[in-house]
Length: 341
Ligand SMILES: NC(=O)c1ccc[n+]([C@@H]2O[C@H](COP(=O)([O-])OP(=O)(O)OC[C@H]3O[C@@H](n4cnc5c(N)ncnc54)[C@H](OP(=O)(O)O)[C@@H]3O)[C@@H](O)[C@H]2O)c1
Image 1 (spheres, helix red, strand yellow):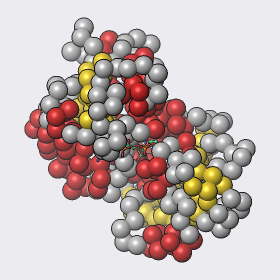
Image 2 (cartoon, helix red, strand yellow; image 1 turned 90 degrees about the horizontal axis):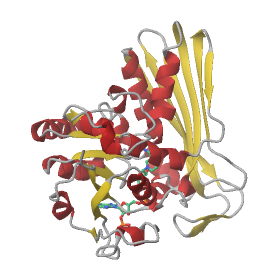
Image 3 (spheres, helix red, strand yellow; image 1 turned 45 degrees about the vertical axis):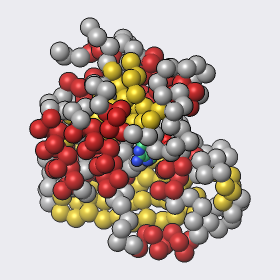
């Protein structure tokens, strides 16, 4: 069986880790795309810190790289469908499956319906699959979905998670408003252009998976402020006391059948001693809980996008969200082993 051929789309913090994992799992990387001219022409192995050349020159010409006949593009570029549509459309138009870390792509049907329907139509026409995955896939969606499946009746689903913004690159730090003043944060929060919260897409997916009917969706957000000057490696700045380190969103979906779903998610630059957490509680018959201790969120983001690759290639064409894919599995062997044809 031939190895899976992949294009690495975005050469930042996440795809640097993912590049090594792809190679470990027998994937042949045939191209890499970045934006800046500073990275163009450099070897992917050098840029991702592998310590060896891969013979793959990074390009800032996506169409050229996507014409190379890859089986899949592995995208780690941005978070929201308004931005991500560009990379997803290019992949679909070139007839290449794509799996992305863009958070909204986890379940974008309610927050960006027009864009998602259009991408779905292009992917169906060219016979490829587009999927959003990442840390949310199992920890915030499919594990919780499975936990719900162990109950007889659900009254409330309550999730709490946190992650350290400084485990990622500048893209996410800027999106989490790191380094802004409280006034700038409030202006952004109240602006009509504020993108959907990451938690909203998680709850949309969870509710859709139950078949329940959403009747109200609310979001409240509060900033996390620096109580001491805190250096932020992703941005090369130190956030002064009183400025923003990130924020907490609390999303809630109520359903007409009764159960409500609440997810409180904090993404901020951590002070010394803080650790990621993931805790879910289902109140009903019976009450059940899921807690993962100190979750290595950045690593589990990368492992899941890699382990999902065979599922995405095997899936039917279209925009296919992860709750419709098979259960996420450990991949003991080279990834092509798991292809159905
Ligand atoms: N779903 C999840 O669980 C999860 C977890 C972690 C991160 N994420 C998301 O994944 C994204 C990437 O994270 P990261 O930490 O790797 O970010 P990062 O270090 O800032 O890297 C982003 C990369 O994307 C490239 N890029 C930006 N716009 C581009 C374009 N139009 N075409 C091609 N390349 C482009 C940048 O290129 P240049 O350097 O050349 O400018 C950079 O290499 C973020 O939006 C983050 O929110 C999701």
